[in-house]
Amino acid sequence: MSTEQKDELKIVISLKADRASVGIQAPECDPAFFGLEGDLQATLKAVPKFVEEAKTRWQTSKLYAKCKTPLPSQTQLAPVTSRASTDSRSQRATTQSPQPSMF
Image 1 (tube, rainbow, N blue to C red):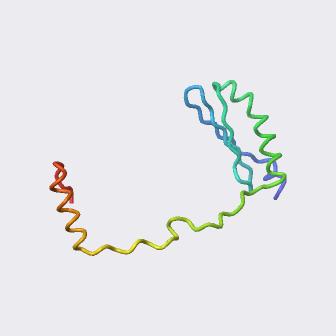
Image 2 (image 1 turned 135 degrees about the vertical axis):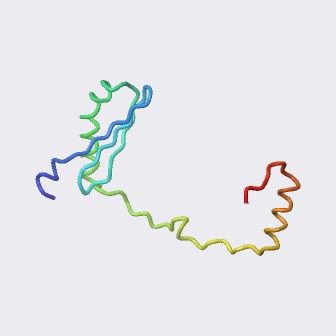
Image 3 (image 1 turned 90 degrees about the vertical axis):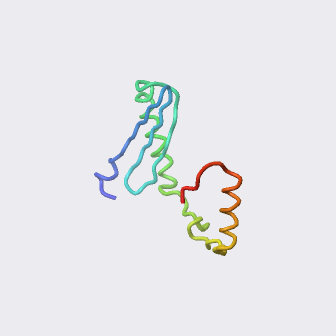
């Protein structure tokens, strides 16, 4: 990591009513997120403390642990049902529901 990258930070502040969310990210580090009650002035006063907390966290662990469990998209799909069961399902839907079928 170069000296320029070491000093580089991205700070994002999101305000909604009396609630603020602050995200801080450095190169080659996962972002750190913080929340607090208050307006923009209170948030800006808290940002230096959040930056120090993020830097302290990054000294011990720059990146979160990798997920080792399979994602839902990586699991096998359910078997396709036969057309007979689909037809009977659509017949039940039309007899039970006054809403017209869209398909």
